Each structure stands twice: as C-alpha cells, then as structure tokens.
Image 1: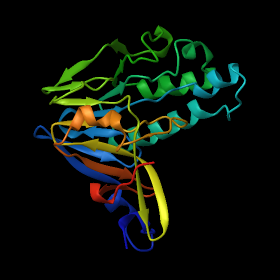
Image 2: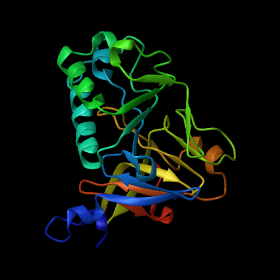
Image 3: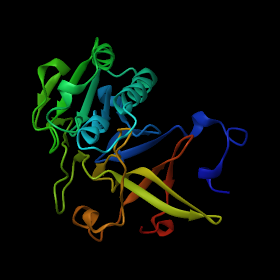
Length: 242
C-alpha cells in the first residue's frame, strides 16, 4: 500500500508531515502545506499565493467563492506556527494582479499584519505582481541570495544551480490501485528546487509538461507530492502526463 493511501489509523501523521531535502548541500524541509522551511536560516519560503484571485475573476464575470485570501493566510498561519520562522520569503505572484492590494478586505489585511509581527517579511516580485503596495508591509525585492542560494520567482532556464523558485505551480499525477491522484508537488534535482503554488485557487502544471524540460533536461529530477496527511517522495517512473 502506498504512503499516499495511509490513514491516520495506519501511520502517525507527524511522521509524514514533512520531508527533508538537500539542495546544494543545504538541508531544507518540504512541508505538507507546500511551504519550504530552511532550519539553518530560520526561514519559511512560500511561492505563488495569488491573493485576491477570486476577486479578480469576479471583476471579469467569473464567480468564485470570495474566500481565497482568507484561506491562504490561514494555511500560512498554520505553517508559521509549526516552524516559528524569523524570516518569511514569498517567491512572487503573492498578489494575483497589481490591483489586488486595494481589494484585500480589512480583516485579511489585519491578519497579514499579525503574521508579520516580530519577523522579517520579504516579498519577491513576480510577473503578476511587479509592484507591491506599502500597505502590505514587509520588504520588496526582485530576488534575494541567502546562504549561497538564489531565491527568485522565475526559474532560470537551462542548466542552473543554487536556485529556489516558484512560478510553474508543479503538480504530479499518478495512478494507484485504479485511482488517479493529481496533487501539487515540489520538484528538484539537488541543485535547484521549484515550489508548489501555495495559494488556495492556484492549480498546477504537470511536471512532465515540456515547460520543465529546460530546467532539468535529461539530468532527472525528484518529486515530493503533497498528500492529505503529508508530503511523500514519488518515483518518477510512476508519473503520468495529463
């Protein structure tokens, strides 16, 4: 039976809640929420929050439940409570568009401010949010280098190392005992890592899509799939395209 199918009765949830990864010798923790924790830097890293995506779609006539920002911030609060980071880095596309900061409800903005208390908060700009309003607090940068690793939104095409990025919303699909599972995932090759999208309504791009080929080529990559109760390594031979 695959670990993806394990229930709380069969295994302790805490045992699978996170997986340790190594990128260029740095020990990192892939959390079941889709966040990445760097113990050596006391840093929590998330990608692609896409806050206010629902309100952006509503303005164009597509109605979605208007709670994506609240749900995303609540999930982020749980991850912060789990690791108590000194630094939080959001790897771009934290806002769904440049007007999102003006649409955030006062209660959600207050919740964000509470999360920022007593810690450094860094917004990395992305293609959806090249500018981030001051009302969101924190620092705004195009990218940041920490401990020899570059933290950016857009992955560098071609052979690159020492990089943690977002943007691509990686997801993995596999067939298990007659059932198909498709879930967000971390994808990397010990030299670089792409984080899953953290936002509530973000969706995902299959890691077998051609968009990932320029990043990993024929060097191979590893996949850590988010399950309902943990994050699990999955052999690439088990993966299917969409």
